[in-house]
Length: 168
Image (tube, rainbow, N blue to C red; front, side):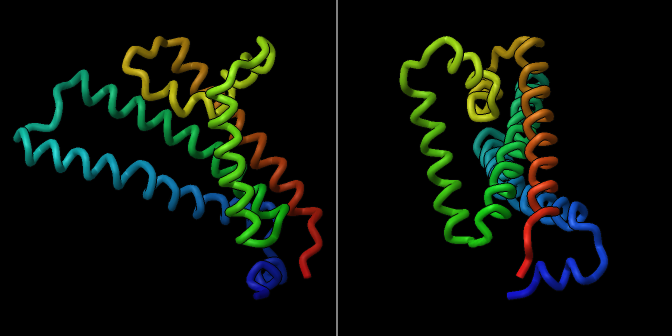
């Protein structure tokens, strides 16, 4: 429809346009995946029992959903890269669903030690790990570093690809 072309013609640097698209997409994903469910759960808990949580429950909730949001940022960076590479919303949806299903299957099947170790340090494995109520400090450091590194690497790759992409 010419929207991206018009934004590029406006004089903004391509990496800034790409980053803005990523931020908006990630904000929408966080609202739909984190804020609405947590808000609904808190309201339901307040209505049913009259209190929200004690301190331990609140710390767990903030930690787990904060780390989940960080992994989600890495996932949205991957999906944004797929969207730029495909250039078509239908293909992007198909590839993102396929990627999610493939990662779910990989999590369920037996793997070699190397693949298992690599997978354990991916955002896909961390989605489940960050909800563990008995996370150690090492688990938290691993989740934070995995989320940050994945997000930054995927954003840099996406900015590079978008900078080289021919816009018609």
